[in-house]
Image (cartoon, rainbow, N blue to C red; front, side, top):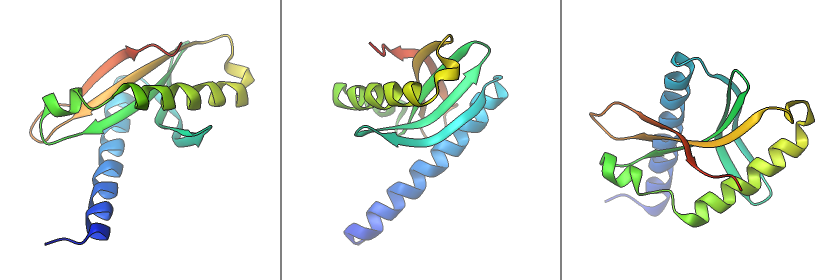
Length: 123
């Protein structure tokens, strides 16, 4: 049986691997990374990506099933992402004229990653 510390380490490593896979998936779709694991204002954004005139704040979720992944971004998580996104925008005034949105990439073993542009509002 794993210890609590061992479970936390496994979860952290699995999450980091999922973020790398999501990063590569989005780059193959023409996005370029601006930031990874941005934490500010009590929130965290896994990936900040840009394609054209759009900046996407991307939440990455991996679960045992795709259905579980799709259900995993609750309102509390959305609120923390919105807070961190506002902080990122404030710290990067050069992008103020661009379009901003909150995307999500969902992953599950044996399935293709699922990218959901504009998964939830930033307002």
